[in-house]
Amino acid sequence: MVAETPVTASASNARVQTEPTPPFVEVQDLSIHYGGKKILSGVSFDIYENEIFGIIGPANSGKTSFLRALNRMDMFTPGMNVTGTIKIDGHDIQRWKNVYALRRRIGVVFPLPVGLPLSVYDNVALAPRLAGIKRRSELDIIVERCLTRAALWEEVKDRLDSLGSLLSGGQQQRLTIARALSQDPDLLLLDEFSIAVDPVTTMRIEDVLKELKHEITIVLVTNLVQQTRRLSDRTAFLLSGELVEVGETAELFEGKVRDQRTLGYLEGRFG
Amino acid sequence: MEPQTTDRARSRRERRRGEDRRDRNWYIDKAVQALVFIGGISGILFIIGIFVFITKEGYGFIAETLDIGEFLTSPRWRPTSDHNPTYGALALIAGTTSVTGLAMLVSVPFSLGAAIYIGEFAKGRTRETLKILVELLAAIPSVVWGFIGLSIMNPLIIKTFNVPIGLNVLNSGLILGLMAAPIMTTIAEDALKAVPDTYREAAEALGATKWQVIYRVVLPAGKNGLVAAVLLGVGRGFGETMAVLMASGHSINLPTSVFDSVRALTATIAAELGETAVGSDHYRALFTLGILLFVVTFVINLTADLVVRGIRKK
Image 1 (cartoon, one colour):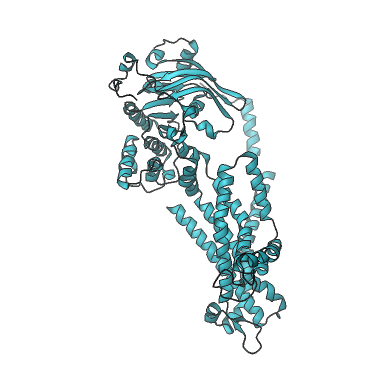
Image 2 (cartoon, one colour):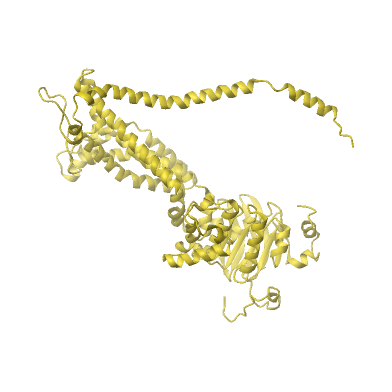
């Protein structure tokens, strides 16, 4: 980002006034096809810097596919076809020369925890190592910082050498979050992160996310309407691959909706 | 309110009470359990049986005639000598070891490479075709490999390296490597396929390149299977008889270079057993070689098991 842009991290509602900040992610007319099937049809919206952007909607509404398109995981998915443009930080991601460098800027947390069959330490140190950091002291700092941020450090600091895949489900999910943070991303994508996590831990992670948004732009895909209410500044509602509406979360929950379907979904009248 | 039981619930309960008897499914279950148990235990019984048989034939010889020190350290295998037969197996052990060693040197990198290509890079039809071809290669009879060693490799080695004889460690090592590679490839590819895709995706999401994903995540995750694949190849090398018999030159030698002819343990048994009188010293000496092969194979498998367990524990 350009340096003269005023930093608006102090309060999330200040962002609305300093609108000249260009959106961090611009989605324009994005469609995703899977084989012959349409998953996402021509959606457009912007995601601003330092906000938590919630995406809600029932199953098969295209939420996960959108996240996959964001970090170009479509490259690995045979039959997945993405049209339209996504710009991150002003650059069209389809034109990115080194897709690996793009992914290093984006942290991803999957719905089900993926503890790689490496030690807890190596799980978190993997991304920094991939980026070429070799010094143990440097890695130590990153590992401790990321585990602390993911609210896991206290529980695992005495067994950093044990296998990450042996941790409990909730711990593995926090390990995944620590791993996603270890590459120091600009953008953090969370895909229903709390599915395998108990409510208490979920709350702790949510607190972490509220802190993190001052330095990272977060996209939160969730099935839990109340979670998006608690966390996101703005929320998009997807239904069967269509963007029903996108707006300030607080306003949506106050009932200021443009589409009655949004209200129905938020109030749990259909899903 | 009075709890009400409907007629439907009552009759259902009556019916269920009558169901407590040993029906067809119960007997089938017991029968299958018994059959599977017999199948499982018979494998172990056969192995014990083989061990007992080989030991019985060779044991008397080991106890009475054989000098274990000579057996393991002398390269002189002269069981047919009239006045002073010697039973030194060192040259045979060296023959088997050198051929297997060279074979592994050749085949391990190639088959791991092939497995990584088939499992991680090749897609769709290429992948299926390659898999079928590799499995086809594994089905080539060993005598055909021996024939290739004898009639193609032999003159080729003589011509290329300008050596008097082309039936040697190099020839049989290459042949054995080619033979072991398809099996190792198949097993190693299975091991890679067993690594969940979620691991790959997680690493890709971290910005890992294709090679980084393989090197940092897939190979460590599939380590056990890969070790098993390599050891299966080693086992194949030790046990292979016909191809080695045909391509190694079959002459008793402590090899000092890859151009020396050697003789393998297995080939010795195969070539000589038919010409010995049952129960003679020579006959029993061959069984002693069999025991040695058995022990070596056992040790390899045990090591593999311990290695794999060690990896798991960590």
